[in-house]
Image (cartoon, rainbow, N blue to C red; front, top):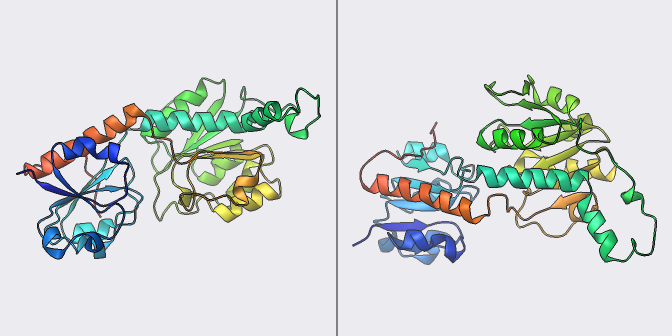
Length: 317
């Protein structure tokens, strides 16, 4: 009989097909496991699949007494209580770099759409204002990309791919990360220094308590009135009320966002700004990225059930 695996988060069924061909899946679909399955059904579960951003604490882990592996679908694991997992000697794995190219692509797309005001231009054509020669202050010429200083916050796999892409637009590229990397870009000693220097801040840092609200009102002010912020990391990295205030008061010129403090993000003050480009957390949502992430999940599960170390482990505290 195939080994049993609990699906903890809510996933589209299509993303679980490959796992179901190899394992017996018990799908909690985002609900608490003990609300969907009996204690007897959960008693022999040894591994689970979760989305990295889904809160997964000790209480949920304790519902599965034999749990030995938590495998995150995607690069993130910020929702997993790593200390609780370490206490129970539960291995945690993820899919590092599997969606990096796709996420970098959406970061650059958001940057260009915000800086060149593509959504405003699209609406200008669709509503007839262009045909009617109706003047629009939003359609005035803006500074383009050539010569812009683009700062990348976080120089991991995604950050490096973003930097390589934006450099092709005749920009200057700088970065800040916890570790200085061997990359051909200017390194800054702090996020504050990076924000003072750049006019586009690309957020590609891993989410966690140490980066929560790192992009604060002060950082946004340092970007200046010609500044843009693009976030493809996690919504927690930006102080979202501070961002709304900065946009309202024209402290910065605009933003491009794929992630939010709360998801899914309902229409509100943030969504009303014409100078903000929004996508529904689709950075890694390409066919090739899903195949790559699934390959990592399967590799982690196969190794665990074979009694081997996870090939894509998350470092536990």
